[in-house]
Length: 499
Image (tube, rainbow, N blue to C red; front, side):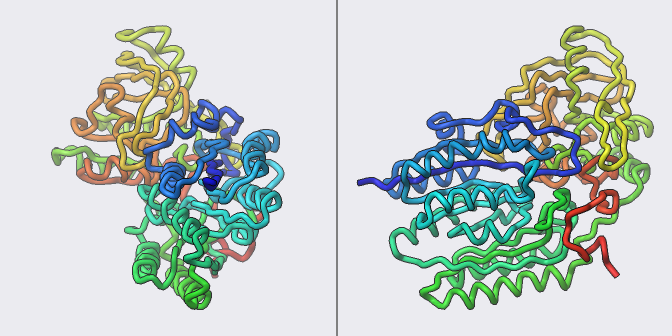
């Protein structure tokens, strides 16, 4: 009789300082969750852990049961009612009987009455099926909890940022579980946590200690000393007791794995702690950054200069309508700029009503107050011509989320004398050139590109760029952690309490 694998996705990176709500409909990037065969059809063949789990089930001759696939852009806490609607289909599928559970989770999800949503999900599944093996794929920005470790059989997380190894991570976690089902391995786990909150702007492997730590992990996996080794540098914008840098290593107990796992885990965390100051981000003044970009771009390098508005990135919970960096770009007179995206449903409605070719003056962006950091929204008056109007239905070309469909909502381009500004109804991080090409804007033909992103832009845009200039604007994804009023962090913690 064929084995039965329950495969589910429940993913949310929760910024507890974000002003952006997280209704049920947000899961599915605005279209709501997917269920059953709809989830399989939408995610099969994509660069996601969910797709890897489907392939593993097929390879093992197992029936794939997919109760739910739900992923939202980062934002504030979901309600308990929303969380229950997400978890209940998973519970029902497990309760119906299964031989394995494979979960595509985030690792930094918080709900209104629980700081550790993933830990709760796993504990609830484990209560229903105490002996069933559970494999979990986690995001790089996980705040790992004891409950997650205690209830998972196998844990593996992304090793890249931008996250281009999502399928690979799901494959690693799932293959270990399948091997355990066959009796080939007996997974054991070692993990550790540090009182260290690295700035997300210093997470990328090429930017600091993470690269050396991940290289150590990859070597141990390749040599067969362990089955999976993962660095999790934390998500700094979730105020929870679990927020902090961690490592988790899975090894085979039959081959002396526990000692190997503990040794590698300790070595990974030692590098992070010894080099903790390298995880602190030190920004430059915004005006100086714009001036630097102007000098490079006005030299006509032949490829666009990227201006990265990283303090207002919806990929970490930003409102995506803070206009500080756009205002600085226009004030300093940069020309031939493409900007993406500004979220402003009201401005989109005005442009749709006016129609393509119409001249409009908009109070653009600045509609969102951010009380958690004491910042009020401030619109920017901009005049221009409505250049393009679309339904905002896009498909990513990769390498991140390759093949996944997404929804910008109704969208339009405002063409000013110096800039073309993509304005959308919904949040969206610009990690793929489709964010411009969908609107007939060729990014490689522009002198400057301004992106509301942090690091993920590197997936699609870094190969196109002559230079990158990080711009310290405003918002709830600020890399300066001192702007946040934390209440639940374990203290003391670096760098907030650095001596």
